[in-house]
Image 1: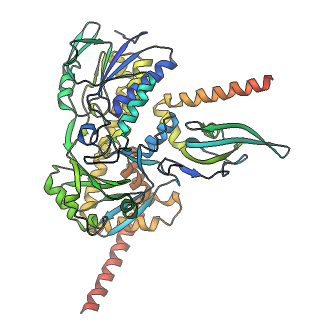
Image 2: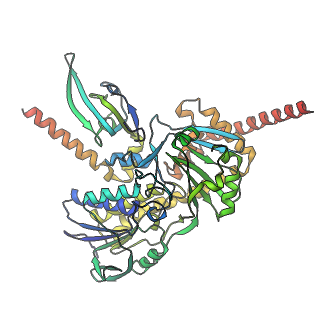
Image 3: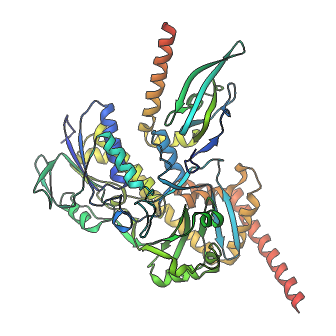
Length: 452
Length: 118
């Protein structure tokens, strides 16, 4: 049976992170274009104006190139007080050295942000939260923000009833799950969304190093530092400059204190910071948040849809971008198609499927990255190829552009793989691996003779 | 001008797009103002003044023709460009991304019609 929103329909959005905000913003925008009056209540228990864990959604906080362009097209300008730093280059570190990859355009398109109002211990009251900014856009568009935690949800014939500690029952025409990876809330959705299986998770590590603004500028500039070091359990490590902070993000398997300590002890990591800084003692704000590594299943039903991390995200990268994609797709579906299962299947599911297929290719890309990470032979070639490319015109920077999109999450993994399989890139890579390693060997021989 | 704002910084008076040149991207103002100007008999005519989050250069996304006007920075301005390729890819995935563009273009057409009437 077709179910559509009517004049005055009410929608509950559970979770006011980027997915919930993007959904609400676009649903209200599309409804306005459609001359339909709807009401949206966003339930968010967290106060994003708080400093520290209480106001944070635990994430690296990168607005990718593709997302900033889509937001610009939508007329959403991220205010300068939300942006901590604009990122214009990536510095890749391997044991053999480092190489800078410049942005393909001569403008800053990547921003680092804080999801909350700054890390624990932050004294800068001017720090503004990205999540709060998005919520304020929803409020401006007419959404109501309710600072409540939902405790129960049940299905009735003509809607969904939700409960919280503050009110006994409230009936909605549609309930949208944007609770991120909050397992308790996601379990609650299983009761109103038959067959819903929450996403598979893994732990990551995020910490914030507080430094002087001038120190961050001197040591990091506008460059995000990424590490492909042969360290156990770490697939990817990154240092993100954020004005007077540097955020460390570690992705991998079973990341714990020991894995983090190994990373912080690596020479290549220590060299990024001032010599006198004891890294192990410097991060006052740290967490081991979960990320989505395998999409949820059956994330919609009549009058219920789950979005963002609660449904499908992008593997390892650009989670905010995935929240935008799924939030917007769900908003488009409920306004122009309907709120029944068949409408979501027709209009929303293909978008999630597209992300899920891309993630499968992403797993393969990270598998290849892992092989490169473990091999000094391959890393020597990779590093040399990037260095060689930086003096060439943009079109000829094949490897650099592939790595740029892998690191920034700006392009889909299928697109990245397709470009990586370019015969010119592969042949140049093989040739550079051979020549760079031979050059290294000759250099080592000369040095050995000299020392003898 | 806040240095952290996304985009490229154009200084006061700097030409952002020049009439008669080829274009293949959309320009979105992130901070500051620009003026849209045309030339008639060697005289400059100011057609419009735009500010954030306005955009310009949209014709370059749909036509292969050259830019129809010159756009100049009015004070320091930060502009973010959206590549034609990225724009079409995004529109292919989600056509609703074109709403704002269509709305603005329709709005500009109405303004031109009104100018012709008088």
